[in-house]
Image 1 (tube, rainbow, N blue to C red):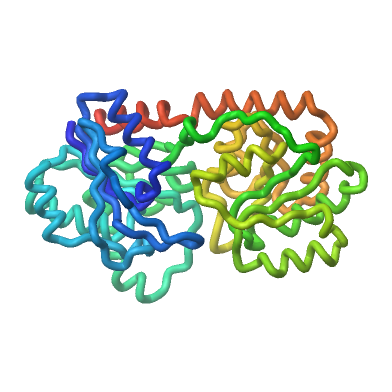
Image 2: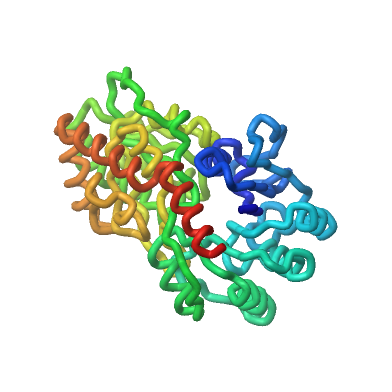
Length: 378
């Protein structure tokens, strides 16, 4: 089976492990993954660089120039380059990981109908909220979305709500609820703690809807009780300056540390310095936590996790961590108090999280489920 994949996520070398593992487990698959040469992300500008070290006999990463790079919906590739690849490779499956309304998906479907008529089409989407659409969207992008959905033979969704939203769009083709990216276990693994001060950690964008102020409030209530614990924020965002001021107003500047964001490959080093990871996000009219990938990275390192009921967080954690009602400070205080005061419970939650990771979120599991789904379509 020949598979052509399009996805900007694989410009990051750490994410390419997904396709390398699938290719290794299923040698009858021939996979080509198209990625942009450059991707301006929120915190870093990422370049594809030398791809040869990641290529296998049946798995090839190809970087191409793009227009509108940095925009998941708008970006696309050179038409002539895509035509050349379609005509030479003749894929059985074409899979695009940019959502149902992406121009890159529209582009490859359109060209395939001319140059590769037998290909089946699948896509991936995270979207788990009903966004308000502008008139421009309704006039133009609605057509793109309907076109893409009408020619799709199946879909992968990152959460249950995304599946419901697709059904509301009258998409009744086979749909598989499956994580897009797992965790590279060569990088994320259990590290021995050496620091005397124990840390509660938050890793991610510093914006209000991530629950960062709630986390400070909860820590402030129990800081005096747990003098050997600190709170660490790793990341950046529009609320960072205000959050720092908020910490000072609460007289916690000696107990709360701010660290600059790090590349994905170095998050494991940050996790090695914390005892409990917290993701306290809450829902808004325009956004919901789609998954919370840092949760499973912590699980892979046997770090206990605490999360809110916002978005898909509680479904990711299951019974392998502690969950509190979103925006509920007392609920978060209770979760933190239990873990901070009980080393055995921390170890138990860490072990449970690791088991859940291996059973549901490892690249081996994702590879097998992805390939089985494509087989069912082909």
